[in-house]
Length: 69
Image (tube, rainbow, N blue to C red; front, side, top):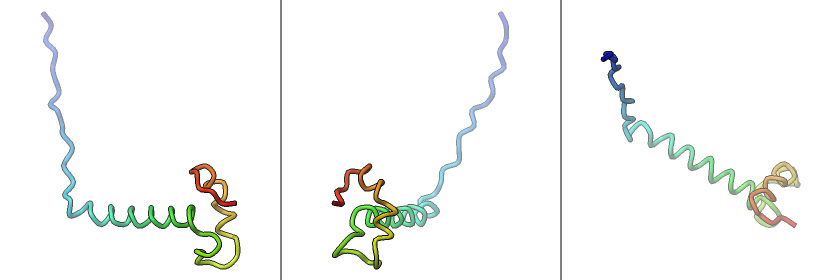
């Protein structure tokens, strides 16, 4: 019989919630901003003048299923 040397299993270190929470909040806020600009930045709910934002995210709106005209 041949002897096979097994390497010890190295487990990743757990990330404490205290260090993960600020990044999760930041990511959530970025996601909400993206959803607003893609889904609602148009017409009466517009925060910015002109149609620049609408035209910039126009194809993304249709891709994600948001109607725009």
